[in-house]
Image 1 (cartoon, helix red, strand yellow):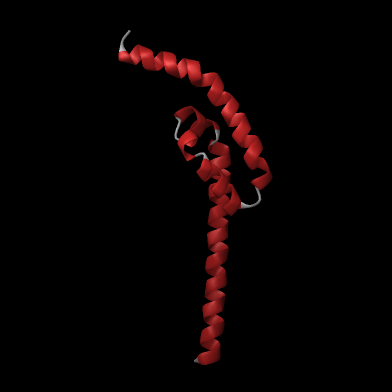
Image 2 (cartoon, helix red, strand yellow):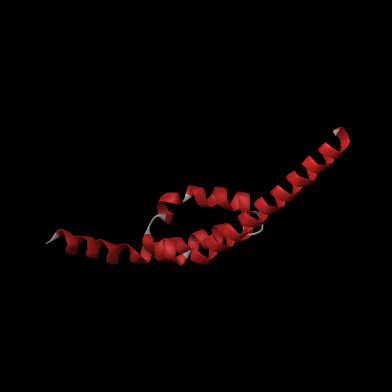
Length: 93
C-alpha cells in the first residue's frame, strides 16, 4: 500500500471521530460564548485538535465569533486606556 493511500485510509477512518469531537467541543464552548477570555482558554486546551483541517473548518463560525469578541474587547480596553490617560493628564498638567 502506498503512503498516500495509507493516509487516505487513515483520514477516512478518523472522520467519524472528528465529527463527534466537533460536536463535543461545540457543546463544551457554547456556555462560554459571552466570555471571550474563558472561551479562548478553553479552545487553547484543544489547539492540537483544532489543527486538524476538518475540525478547523467545522469550527470556523465559532472561531470567527471569538475573533470579533476579542477585537471588541481590545477596542474597549483601548478606549478605557485613552480615557484614563486623558484624566491623568488633566489632573497633573
